[in-house]
Amino acid sequence: MGSSITMSINKIRDEKQKEALNNWASSKFCGSIIAGTGFGKSRCAILAVHHILDVLGGTKVLLLVPTIQLQSQFAEEFHKWDLEHCLDNVEILCYQSAYKLAGNHYDLVICDEVHLGLSPQYRKFFENNTYYKLLCMTATLPEEYEYKQILSKLAPTIYSISLDECVQSGIVSPYNIYCQPVALTQTEKNDYKKIHNQFLYYKFKLGQFDAFDEAKRILADKNAGPAEKSAAIGFYRTIRERKKIVDFASNKITAFQTLVLKNVSNKILAFSGANDFTDQLCASVSPLSTTYHSKKTKKQREKALNDFKNGHVNVLCSTKALNQGLDIPDANIGIMCGITSKSLSMIQRIGRLIRFQENKVGEIYILYVENSQEEKWLKNATKSLNNVNWLP
Image (cartoon, rainbow, N blue to C red; front, side):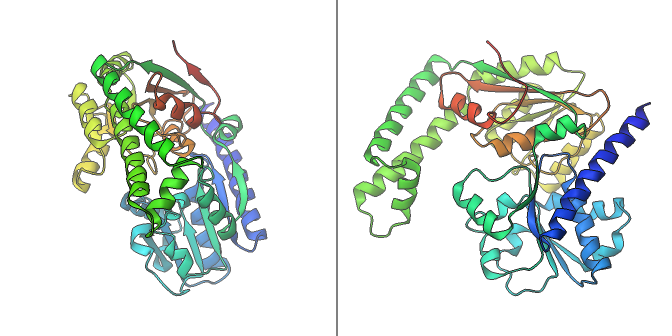
C-alpha cells in the first residue's frame, strides 16, 4: 500500500513538473518557476539542462546557486537522475562567484533561489549579460517591489504553485503551525521600550514618506545633510537593536527546552535569528543537539548534518544556513525562535519539515515576543499560509 501511494505522489509531481517545463519552453525558454519547497525545482533544473544539451545540442550551461552546499547537492542530483554525462557541460557556481562574469558564453543560465541573486551586489551579473534561455526558480515571488520588478522583466513567471497548493496536491506532507507567545523579562521590557521610543523618534524625523525608503534614499545621497544622515543612521540602528532584544529573549530558551522535551522522540529542526543565540539554544538541550550555521567550518557543518541524519542527535539548530537545500524527510518538528516579516524565509523553513513521507504531518512551533514588533512580523510572514494556530 505504501509504495503505491508514493508512486501516485511521484506521478502527480512528474505531471506538474512537466507542465512547468512545457510552459517554460512555450515562453521561448525564458521564465520563472515559482513553487513551494518539495515541488522538485531541482529536478526541473536538471531536466532543463538535459533538454538544452541533449535535445537542442547546446554546449554549455551555467547553474547559479546561493551556497556551496547546494553546489555539491546539484552535482548529486545529476547522478540521481542518470544524467551525470551532462555535468561535463555544466558549470555550477555560487552567486558571489559569478556576479563579475561578463559575456554571453552559455546556452542556458539557471538561477536557483533567484531572489538571492537579485540583491544589488549580485544583480550585476544580469546587468552585464543578456540571455535568450534563462530559467529562474524560487519558492515565492520576492516581497520587495524593486526585486519583483527586476524579476518580472528578467524572467516573467511562467508557472506558479504555492506551498499550500503543493500540500493539497499531496506532493508534500501537511503541516500545522502553532504560534506561541513568550514574555520579555522586566529588564528586557525596559530596554525594548527605550529603543522603540528612539525608533519612533527617528521615524518621525524622516518625515511623512515611508521611513525605510527615505532612510535608504538619504544614505545613498552624497549631498544629504548631517541631520538627515543622523536620522537615517539612527533609524536603522534602532531597528537592529530592537530586533536583537526579541531575538535573544531569554524566555524563548525556556519555552524551547519545554518543546524539545515534549517532542524528544522526533527529529527537530530549530531556527533562531542570530548565530550566537543558535549556540545558546543548542547548549540548552545538549547533548541532544548540534549546530549548523555560517560561523561553523565546512567540516563542522558536515559533521553536524551527518550526526543529525544518522540519529546521533535529534535536534539540529540553525540560523539561515538551512533555509535552502536541506532534504531530511523524517524531520517533522520545527521550532522557530527568530523570525522576520518575510513570508519567503517562513515558507523555506516550513519546506524543510514537510518533505513527503507517508502518514507524516509537519508540526511547526513559532516562539515570538508578544506585543512587540516581532508579533507584527509573524502575522505578515504567515498571512498567506493555512493551518496557523495562535496559542494563548
